[in-house]
Amino acid sequence: MTRTASPAQPDLMLVNGERWSGGSGASKPLEVSQAAGTSRSPGEPPAAESPPGLSPLDRGLHFGDGLFETIACCRGRARFLSLHLERLALGCERLHIPLVAAGVVRREIERLAAGADASLIKLIVTRGEATARGYSWVGDESATRVVLRYPGPHGDEAAARDGVRVRIGSLRLGENATLAGLKHLNRLENVLARSELRANDATELLLFSSSGALVSGTMSNVFIVHNDRLMTPRLDLCGVLGIMRRVVLREAAGAGIAVEERVIATDDLNRAHEIFLTNARMGIWPVRELEGRMLNPGAMTRRLQTLLEHMLVGPTDA
Image (tube, rainbow, N blue to C red; front, side, top):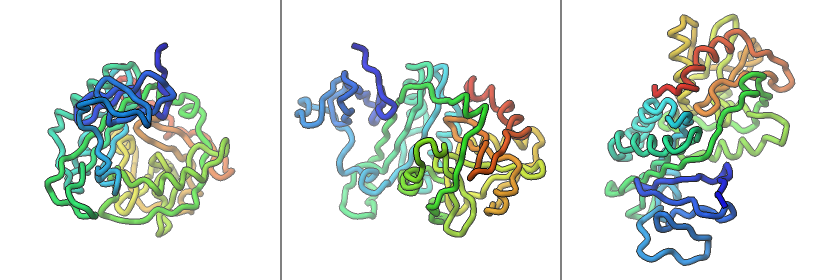
């Protein structure tokens, strides 16, 4: 029987360049400490001479000491891969995590992307196995990288066409300029915020910071349009500098659309004529309802969707 991977389970994984099998049964969870090309269920003894995998002492597991990228792939190619690798390199530099050459990581991602027409690839980089106890790193750690491929498709044509319902979350995001912009592994705020969503209640929550400024969605960046001016929150104190956000800012400026990164308050959100969400997987989703206020996907949103369409289906590397 051909194994069908669930959305929660990858169909292929690389750990530091070594290939790991997803197993032969959908009911058996994937374990990373297994021999390449084999599978076992929890409780079964490991295969003899199994190669090193993910250590239980990895600092990513203990402290969230690392970064990740989620990369949409179509037609066997990774979308905006250069931009993802650039953001990863900047994050590793800020966190002082040494990483193998970008070309090595690129080849691993391209190899996995080429094996499926549509997929979602998650790249995780941690500082590696701890060599001493405690929060401080020693400096002799060896970074761990994990590349997982999840089966596609990953788009939602109805959401892109008709828009989505959005609510405002009660959770407030902490402000920390040192971590602002990074796609780091500390995602508990997002986990807790997503728990506020109830079935069929809304697709996404908008989140404000502890100082009352709009930041983002739980899994997306947000743009608003007021008087034909495109605006998105500044992310110098918290939030993730999303890849699709970057692309929208770049393409809007190139098309002569006035665009501004600024502090956005609740009143600004309430006055917005258009609101849309972005991330690298979904592209642009218009907001059709915010806390009971009905909105129509407007001309600015549609124009930007059209500008980006060929980049998403191509897909474009940068």
